[in-house]
Image (cartoon, rainbow, N blue to C red; front, side):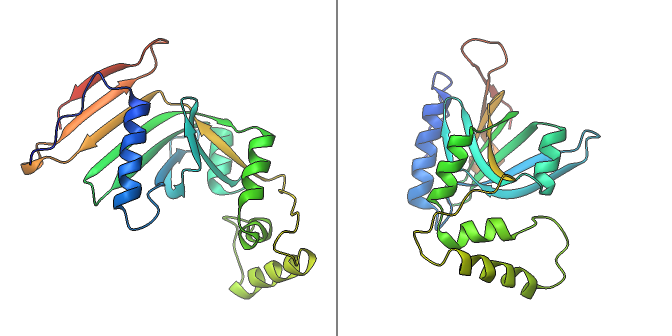
Length: 202
């Protein structure tokens, strides 16, 4: 059965929600995994996988150590690109735009929602810095665990751990078609009004 073409009169956020819901049913794990690409002011790119932790019409949210490599790059050049690739569905979505910090309240709420061991690990990790051996990291986690032994312990969010919201300048939807005659459509948000949809050559 031929997959219907992407409708250019669709609302891109509604379409994103539909594709994400289908991915959550079809993907074996982490349907919310996305590639986050950042760059230095000099244009040197870097990319890694992170998890989408919230989205709405204001943008797409992820969390990180602000002193990590990506944190440093975002501080110096607050623009990024996201890529969702759902292999089982033969679909991908690319999103590009500026990054803004989430609010303190949002960061606190999400940090508190994480499992205890994940909160301890976030505090113990000097993310992206050299680690002499694994035992040193595990010792830090164990020491913190002795300070906060209960599963429901109130573990304060460290100041160097927070999140960002990418506000889209563009959202591009791609789906596989036979013989590499793929279907692509992009929504441009930079005109200040209703986003403009354009179908692209594959």
